[in-house]
Image 1: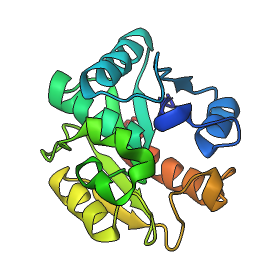
Image 2: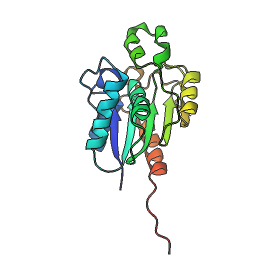
Image 3: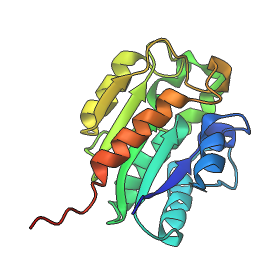
Image 4: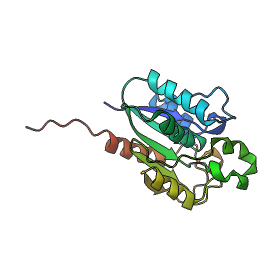
Length: 190
């Protein structure tokens, strides 16, 4: 059985042309809708994610972008895990601990400090070499702390609409490969 994708948007709820929204439509994914998508707080955003996880049947794969990544890692810190969460794709994690370099999105600092404990499920961090919201070095540190695999998306900006990633076919390939690794089919051997 193919896991249900749970889209965990960042600030502004990842607009209509964002790859997360396009994937939601394409794959019938479940979306986490925050009451205030422009005002992230760890407890409130993690609680909403937990509500969606509890209400969504079957095996789940979480797909977070930017502040959505922080929502997932705070959820893991606050709730531990859930046996149906089989993995998480963590794209362009925002660095909430160093938002002073990006005053435009200082509100992301409300998600600090970023949890740096191993995640209780497999994860893949996809980061860009020129992301204005987290350095490549910092993204690698996150991946190492979270015990996650790490992939560079090259010079891809923040991997959002502004950086030319409305439709993101390379991301779909990464998600497909990760889902296959995290939820191998049951094989009956004779």
